[in-house]
Length: 244
Length: 244
Image (cartoon, rainbow over all chains, first blue to last red; front, side, top):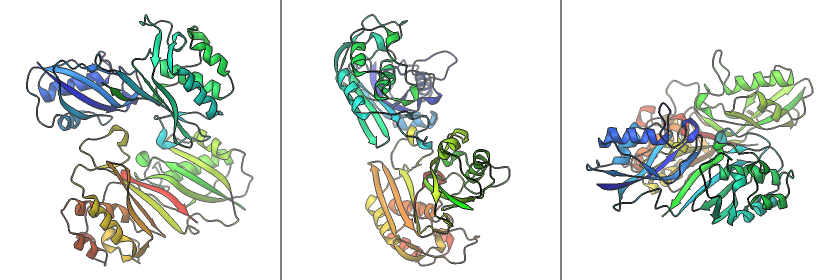
C-alpha cells in the first residue's frame, strides 16, 4: 500500500460537516466518491480536523492508503468532478504510513466576526455579523487568558464523548483583517467539540460588557457548561491549517 | 424636495443588473421597493454606475429626491427588508440637487482574476478562474498602455448606444491581492459598455502569449470590435468606488 496526502478547502454552508453519513452531503463522502471515480479505488480518508456542519476549511489535510497507482494530475481531475464549494488544492504522495489525523501536531482555526452596524454582502455566510458593542481591549485580554493549559469543561457540550477536558492552547489572539473584521486565531494540539465557538460566544459577552473578565477567567478552571456563553454559529469558523 | 445619498454593496450573482426591469430582480428594483416600504414614498434612484447582470459592487453610490422626512436609522431599516446579497452601507442627507450619476467625476472598478492551477471555493463567483499561463510583466505593460485618451471602439459591442468611443483612463494597474489573485484597478470619468471586461479578456490573451503587445496597442486606436479578445465574464468585476 502507498500513502497519499490531500490539502483541501471547502465552503461548509452546504455540507453536513466532514464525516461521511448515509444520505447526507458531507466533505468526506464527496471526496471518497470522487476518489473512487478518478482513482478507481474505494479508500477511507483520515482527516486532521473533523469539522461540524457549516464550518469552513481553507487548509484541511487528509490522507489515505491506496493499492493502485494514482493518476497524473489527480487534484485537477478530482476538482473536475467535485462541487464548486469543495476543492483539492494539493494531492501528492506522502511518506509510508502518514496519517493526517494521528500525525498532526496542532490545528489552527480562525473565527471571523464582522463587527459593524451594517451587513456586508460579501461576508454573508463567511463571518458572524455582530452589531453589538465590542471592546477590542477586552477581547484581547480574553484571548490572552486562554493561552496555556486549562480545563475547558465550560466550553463543550455536557453530552460528549470526551473524557479529558484539559487542553493546551498554544496561540490565541484577535487579528484585525480590516477595521470592522476581527478574527480569532487559535492553535492547539487538539480541541474539544464546539470549544472555539463557545469561546467566541463567551468572549463577545465580555467585549459587550455583559460578563466580566474575572468571570471569563473562572470559566477556564472547569466550570460547568451552563456558566459559559452561547455557541457562536458555525459559519464564522475556518480550519485554517495543520502543523505536522 | 430634499436629497439623499446611499452607499451600496451587492453580490451581483442573483441580480439582472442595476436597472429596474419588469419581472426581473434588479438592484434598483429591490432598493426602490424597500424605500417605498420604509420611507413610504415612491422615489427614483440615480446611480453612479449602471452595472450589468452578474457584476458586483462594493462602493456603489445612488441618490434620490424625497418629499417626506426620512426615518431615523434608514440604512438599518432598509437592510432589515433587503435580501442578504444587497446592503445599504450609508444612507444620509446630501446637498440639495446632488445627483449620483451626473455629479460623479470618476468611477473605479476592479476586475479580479484567480490565476492558479486549482479552483478556490471562496473565490467561486467572485473572481475569474484562469488556469492558463499569465506573464505578469505583460499584464502590467498592457495596463500601462491603457492609461490616457484612446479610441476604445474595439472594446465595446458593435451594437451600442454610444456615439463617442474616445475615453480617458486615469488609472489602470494590476494589483496583487495575494500571489495567485490579481486584480485590475481602473479609474475613468466614464466607461463604455463592457469596456473593462473586453480589456481584461484581451490582456489575458497577451499575458498568455496568444497576442502581441503591439497588437494590443493598435486596438487602442479605434480598431473594430472583432479585432479584440473575448469579453471576460461579469463575476470578476466590481464597482469599487465613485469620486465626486
